[in-house]
Structure formats: structure tokens, C-alpha cells
Image (cartoon, rainbow, N blue to C red):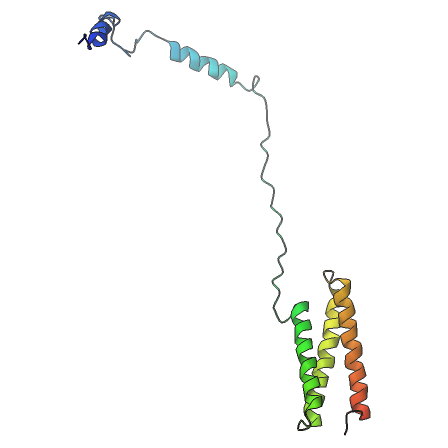
Length: 153
């Protein structure tokens, strides 16, 4: 085999034995000169004035947490359930007219409430508005029929 340590043996030729590596020379003023140049550039006459941008207030989003009982969809579904109940009570001969009347009054009240909510809502589309109008018309028509005695047998 050859001389593997030859690289290590040659390194001593490049090191100056009189000078310590990384030695600090007390007469060397390189840092002082560099620091002086930095300080000269920091004088107010040579510095550029820059106004830092301040953080602006982040506008808050208005989050509307809707209660499920107040949403248009829930009101519509509930009104449909009431209409089914009303229809089943009309078909059942054992149900009293007072029970039917109480369901009809609730339908009228909820139909008017839904109609007002849809009119004041910018999110409601035209189909929902038409459905709310039909509910209100149906409720009023049923009230007239009920009071007139059309469902008496």
C-alpha cells in the first residue's frame, strides 16, 4: 500500500510557525475603521427618513349566527309540516273543530311571519318569495273556508 498519511504530512508546510492562527493583533484597527464608516453613514444628514407603515385596523366581518328556528328554510319546513297536520286533522272525523282551528291559526300566524321575513331578507330568492306568498294566500283562504263552514259534514 501507498503512503495514506501523506496529506497530513504535507500540511505542516503551509502553516507559518511564527504566526498563530486566528490571533488578534492589538495594532490592527480594521474593526474600528469599519465601525467608524458605519457610524458616518448613520448621521442624520446622510440618512434617509422613512416613515414606517403602521398596521391598520382589520375590519370585522359581521357574522350572523342564525337560530335554526328563525331561518327561512326552517320556517318553511315547519309550515309544510303544519299544513300536513292540518290536512290530516280535516280528514279525521274524530278530531274536534277546536283542534283544527288551533292548527289553522298557527298556520296563519307562521305564514304571515314567513312572508314578512322573506320580504325583508336580501338573501331570499324569487322562488322562496313566491312560496311564502302562496302560503299566506292559502292560509287566508283556508280561514275563510273554515269560518264559512265548508268542512262541516
